[in-house]
Structures are given as C-alpha cells and as structure tokens.
Length: 483
Image 1 (cartoon, rainbow, N blue to C red):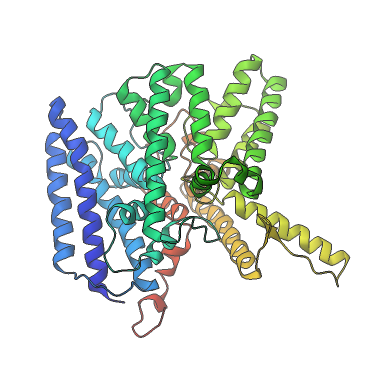
Image 2 (cartoon, one colour):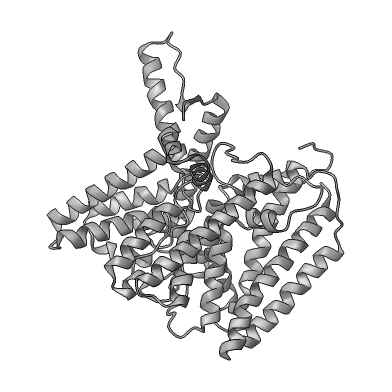
C-alpha cells in the first residue's frame, strides 16, 4: 500500500470538507452569531490538517489498489467525523466525546442527538448538523468522486467500500459519470422536497434544513419535538413520501428517468420494499385502532409516518413509546430491515432479506426433493452462490453485533429491551430507540462508556461492517501482501 497516495487523497477530502464548513461560517457572520469564533478555529484546524496530509502525500497516476481504496474510505470517514465535531467543541456547545457522537450521528445519518435542547443553538450550528446529514447520506466518498475526481486513478475500490448492498449495481459504465448522475438526482430530490415543504407552510430555512435531513435519511431537526413541532398533517404526509423515496435505490430512479416507470415491474427489491412498508402501515393502523382511542385518520397518518421514518430516517411525529407492544415490535423489525440497497438508508437492506428468504425457501424445496436443482433468482437473473454466501455472512455479523453491543450496554445498567433498542437503532442508523432514548428523549443521559460503544456501532452500520473490520486484520497492514 502506498501510504503517500492515501495521505494525498485524504488531504483533498479534508480540504473539501473545510470548504463546505465555510457555508455555516458565512451564515454565522451574516447573522452575527455567537458561533463565529468556534467556526473560525474549526476552519483553521481543518485546513491545517488538510494541508499537512497533502504535503506528506503525493499524487500518482496509476490505479488505486483495493487496500488503498479501503484505507482511504475507512480513514476518510474517521477524519471527516473527527473534524466535523470541531464546530461543536470550539464553540463550547459540547464536550469532546459528545461532539464526536453528534458528528458521527450526523454523517452516518443516524440522527441521534446529545443536545438536551436545540432551541438555544445558533442557526449556523443547526445548519452544520444538517450538512453532515446531507453529505453523509449519499456518501462522503461518492460525492467526493463526483465533484473532485482523482485524475488518472481508479476510485472504484473507494466507491465499493462505501456504497451499500450485496451486488454491484452500477447504472453507468464510467464511475465518475454514475456518481455525478446520482449526485445530481440527490440535489434535485432535495430541492423538490424543500419546495414542497415551503408549500406546506415552512420557512425557507426550515424547509431546506428538513429536506436535507429527509433526503439524506438522517432525522435531525431544528426543533426538539422534531416533525411534531409543525403540527401539520399535510407536512407529515409530504415528509412520509420523501422519506420512503429516500429509502429506495437511487440507481433505480435513474433507470426510471431514462427508461420509464416500467423498470419498477422488473425490480424485485423495490416491490418488496413497498409491500413491507404497506403491510406494516396496515398492521400498525389496525393495532392502534383496536388498542388505542384514536381517530382513524390520525392513526393512519401516525402509522405511515413512523413506518416510513423508522425504516429510513428517524423523524418523529408521535410518541410511539406509548403504542401497543405489537406495533413497537413491527417498528423494531423495520429498523433492522432498513431501506433498499443503493439508498441513503441503512439497515440490513431489503434485497438481503429477500435473498435470505428465497435461499431458505430453496433449501426447503431441496430437502423435499434432494435431486432437484433450485436456483435463487432476483430481477429475473440467477444469483450465484458466492453472493448468497456473502449475504448470509453479512446477516450473521449484523445480528451478532446487535447482540454484542446490547450485551455491553447492559453492563452499564441499561435494561435488556433498552439496550437492544439502542443497538438496533444505531446499527441501522435510525436514531430514536425505545425507553431511555425513545421518541421524546435524547442520548445525552447515557454514560461515556455507552456513548463510545454507540459511536462504533453507528460507523459499523453505515459502512456495512466489512470496510472497518478488514482494517483490523494483521494481513491488511502486512507488507508484501497482494490485494
């Protein structure tokens, strides 16, 4: 592995983050906010790190190796989240650990906050929180490739190390063209969502920040009570639509734009995604109607919003902590499932759930007829055994880490259900959990130990574990190994 090329690319990534930090800094200057000194120091430190990395690195025109791509992606996320915490610390709004937690939560799209209240924070700090959502949603590396491609170098390994899903689903042959198309679509969805939110009565600032958080599948809000603050059924229905949209495959949306809506009929994952959400909404709606004294219209709206949110984003329009246990159980399963591969949402991904079910069904048929050859097919094509094996390995590790983090959290005195809720929520990058960090609570009351565990959980969930886990193996760092 050429360490100097890793330094060089990381330096460019840090400088790009420094440039984006100028936007909330300019907002602070314009509004004469108390965050001006904090942003000034943060910009200075961030620029210094970027220049230091670039001065110790060198540009190379040969292709990046797999190991270099993984290292750039892993360290890129670590550095980006570390520098993203500077405005919080330098401005005196959070201590170091809480600032790291808030930054990781923002970039990974988790939406878990350690701020006790948001009402007293400057607009620039709130906007920076939303920017971390937006840049982390599509992917720091994906946006970096789209806007600042490395001349003469292959960045496919960086892209593969960050993007989600068990299969390679490239919609254009050239990587830069594809990432650029995805980024343009990402910007379009954000702009459209902001425009719709303004029609629902939000100000430009409120509409823009909440659209960034929605399309980035984040969940941060500018208000303590999240979407409940606006008390607007129209806004909640519109946000439900855009949250579900953010949970779909952006590559599929590009194909729809090119070839028409008929593409959806041939996409098994997206159809399964809509079926899962639709059935969950129906079951929660019926459960609420039977168990709670609530109007049918409100029950349907609450069910639809929370199903769309807690499988993708993490906004809250009702205190689902008060819902019947059956409804909370469905929500927990949705947090694990997540959205589609290639979306801004996290979780196991619908395509993996679909492949696991198809493979299990195939094994059952094979037991009944041992000589029968059973093929697992997705979107009309046969899925090879290597892909099925990777899906099974991923699912095992995902469930293992949920159980492992929950076990560690119980050491801190948390109840089993609270620990499982926190583990599922952070691994799935959802945000709201149950009990101690429920719909109307924050993560501020957790201990240093618990917050540290959950920081690792959020990063593992966002990068789908393997990118970070492979960097912990001795072989990755051993010289002479070919990757």
